[in-house]
Length: 250
Image 1 (cartoon, one colour):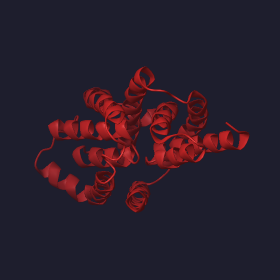
Image 2 (image 1 turned 90 degrees about the horizontal axis):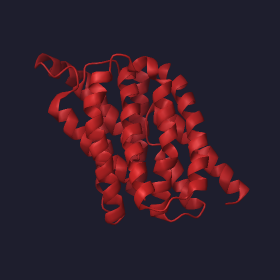
Image 3 (image 1 turned 180 degrees about the horizontal axis):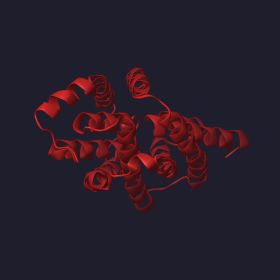
Image 4 (image 1 turned 60 degrees about the vertical axis):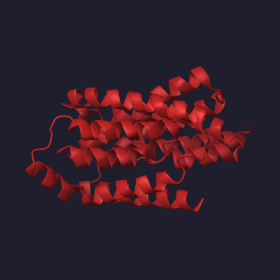
């Protein structure tokens, strides 16, 4: 890899780590960068997942104050995240790369709509006595489905997760964003294990992504924590819509 290509991958990792911690969808920066510097799509995808795992962990650590009191919730949802990540990673290695391409933009736009409607939906669910600790079977199953998508590709996985968490759980958006970072790290982490065992990895590029993403994760936590809920919600919707439109026109 040339020096300009290495710098581009490093910078993409920094940007993705920041974006993933605040909102999600950092893969739309790193994945095209890996393609642009010459990696084949599947190799770029698995390398991207492995390279961004340290950034996800960094973002989760950066939000550690907001994670207090969420241990029981995350213990339940982690099971769904692990199962989904393994399923998605396995599908990536077995299925054609175009399988999810048409449905992904629709999923992201639905997630954006959920984020916008979340305050009203939350009031309605509260009046019906929703499950307050871990969201019940509905959240468990949808986190699993999101984990399948995240293990397979993962662009805007964070947008979908934060929409689901905000819909099913009565909690502050910043605390839910912290939980989103943990679940994303779990999905990407277990998918990375599958890829290390069963696929070829461009370790040099993955290392550069990791270094940039770790720094970006801390930067994203600092920025994201200072955003008022309405701004954070707006950022999620803007980024998610941009991702969906980008995928639709490709």
